[in-house]
Image (cartoon, rainbow, N blue to C red):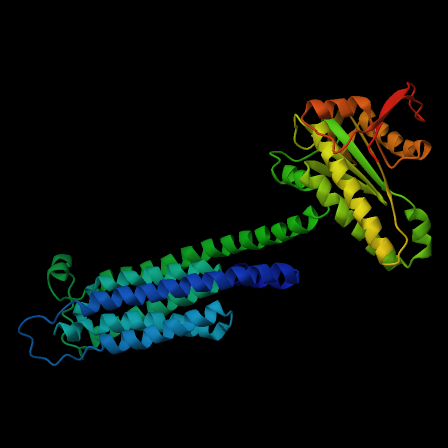
Length: 448
């Protein structure tokens, strides 16, 4: 139980996290230390202005034994060095503890010198409003999301204040004037034990509450960073639109839930890849696929398409499925033109490099489909289902019969033109073609 409490408070659970998650947390901590460093520098600057603009009380004959200026200069140099190390990510953990002690010592030292500066008994400094800065120091440590630094700061502040109380009670700084009268305490240099006890308790209780809050916040931070890293990794396996849909879902996504969409479907296949894959080494096969998909997929996405799935060397993309669009056919035609052009450049590059050129097969179709999640509940996949998907696949295979590389049915082509698509050249039309697996004759348009 003690070990679990320790891990909960002090963040020991991060030891079991993947390195990339721990690195993300370390980066967050480094940014926090920069903020803390600037806050400390601002604090010491404000305190220096406040202390250096006040003057000794009139008629004081005691020599000024305050060392405000020297303390501020020394601590200012320390704060700047600490900030430089924070920016360079060279701040060792031991220096964080030294910084806590230095912060507390600076504040307590300034409070201590008040009774010298104003020639009053030591008990007078116990009423200094500068004590309130203690809570700022404790709160600053919360920026790092580690409860241990909050606890150390709170304990150091409580210990420092107790030391000041004991010194005031010792009588070496003047008579303590102990009293039980609250009014006398308020109106004179008198010491009231209940008041000082409340101050120490306030420091300790603030520390405990803030440490618990930070421990809870750190656990949420670790979970958030872990899930964020996992989401970034997993999003590489999904189309960006699908990934955004999953992240933004109000309820848990369940299989069997779908929506009707009017879409355009684009299917692309790499010709000769099956034969080539038997001749190449496995690593070369994957590099070839990466080269091909790296050229084709960005063009599809940039024209409004979503990659539905990879089928070996085949690519199935949809337009208007993830997010409805009034220009799905035109977008699909623009993407098809871009892919054809990229395929021609790729073939020319391979010829120039002495490699066998590869060509693509492409087809586009449009219609109403169902878009939704399918799977067994444990593993889901967003996909499009409908006649348009099957029709596009059959059209792509029909390229071989037509001795073409890219086809689209005339209805889809007409829709694209109505939606603002302008063809780069006049396309050949072939009416009344028999496409395998399609009952009716199909009017097709040759894209390439």
